[in-house]
Length: 34
Image (cartoon, rainbow, N blue to C red; front, side):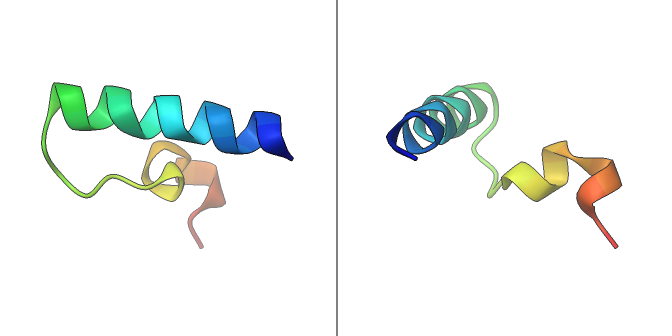
């Protein structure tokens, strides 16, 4: 579980660095969206 949180943190940091928009893992996962 700790590894998942760490990966998510890095993922969010990279997203914020690219474009300052509220990007969630769901947005990066089109198949996860209903």
